[in-house]
Image (cartoon, rainbow, N blue to C red):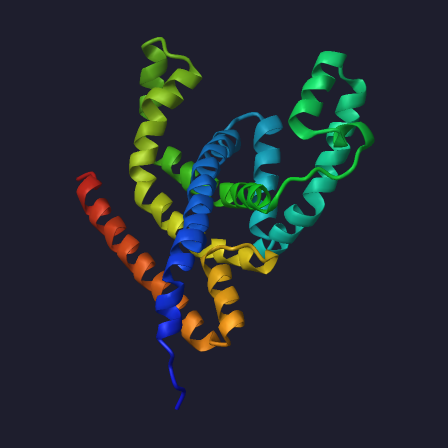
Length: 252
């Protein structure tokens, strides 16, 4: 029988929640907000009657959902600094001097010689999860938009509203209401997926627990504790989603 040492958990609670869980919640919140915004724009593009908009959006969504998230994390962390360095270097060469000076103030002198930009682990993680989760939020929002009666679109045009006014004032509010439980469920999945940044040695909740486990040699205690915390949080959030769904459900 394994001799559990619960004292290592109590000693590390401050570090785990102050540093690890704070990073995890910040990453989840930023990725959720950015993913919903980008996903809504992609959903509107996919529903467009112009193939100039619908085709690229459909290609992006299908390609992103076919790639493992872990691979996207590695791509963004290792390749994004080189891609951004090259793009901003080329932009610096063709831009007027005021714009070039602005690029230098924002990104540093790397834009002059094309060296990789120092993006940072947190920024790279936020970009990764926004780009990846936007594909899933896009499909959720597309279903929500299609759930709204098309007659409301025609009625808004009859009242003199244009396409964007109709979408932002009539269609999207109803779509968000219809899809809110699904959006929150996807956010719970996002909260679980953020633990994958552990492979980049980032101090998220799992990464912090892993560092404590390696330091004290108590891997079983720390990983069991992390699994228990994730289980409790996700179970509680799922219960809240079910309560919210019952309160906002539209009786038809």
